[in-house]
Length: 327
Image (cartoon, rainbow, N blue to C red; front, side, top):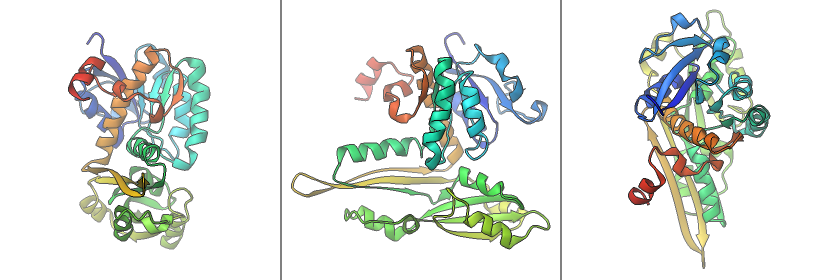
């Protein structure tokens, strides 16, 4: 085990379990501990690693190289991100796009004085899709960028729905509007409003006695999540939720449509088709945990994003191997 990157996981839901699985596939890493706000004895990990109370995490300073934060963006990370970045190098998947600048500043205020690296908003969007938006704009400065998500189950949006008063269980699917996708791929660079690109479908199980109309109104007017989209809310039973909505597929694509030279049309596209959204997001987090550890060893401190990480640091291979095998 000597020399392996020591990883901790804060939060053990779908994302935390995915991180554990991804670490098992990464031969240069070892999982040291899982931390939870639940009763530790009630949490059973896939590989049997020790589970500890989140309140006891300070005891692990010096025993963990990178802590991967697996809480939700709406309520968990705004508090946990800054607090834990003061103690450890961290990686998280904060995905409320509109609030990323203020979250970055809050985390940086904790991480930088402590000498820690905190990689925020790591995943596939924000994350890998962000990089491809940057590539597209830098390479085709005369053009337009488009991001489509789905059809797929959004973890962050589903979590936001589940936190609405009166909701017992819920999932939310993001669905691209096919006509809009076709127009973009044609290279015509159309101007599309938010509502024209996606619809959102929510499937909700109500708490007993909850007011359906009130719950629906709370969902469709939720800022940052649903207010800017055509959103449908369908009420179903707990049995239907378990039977029909247990999988977590997702995906999407980033398209840059532009012109070069004397008006040549150029279209760049990056796409993902995911059978398990949390497992893929977890795999991205683990690769960036490797980079966070290496950056910190190089003397880097403070909050950073995927824009600040040299791609070679994501790979367990040496720079010489990468030049020989992948360049």
